[in-house]
Length: 87
Image (cartoon, rainbow, N blue to C red):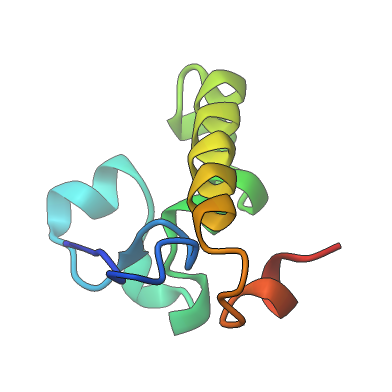
């Protein structure tokens, strides 16, 4: 299950709140990750396993990052993630 953070769309695009066995087999064992790392964007860009799971990793990573940037641009004054994603 993915959580849409509503008006704070820049917050990761999607945080993983729950999963099932199929999701763990396909992507990642989300419950074993720290709560702040249960995020599709973070996982795609940082976790090395994403490169083997996502067949076209580079294309998917670019697309996810573009969606994140577009969401962040729509809310430039949202302080929630400025510190987390800057730099």
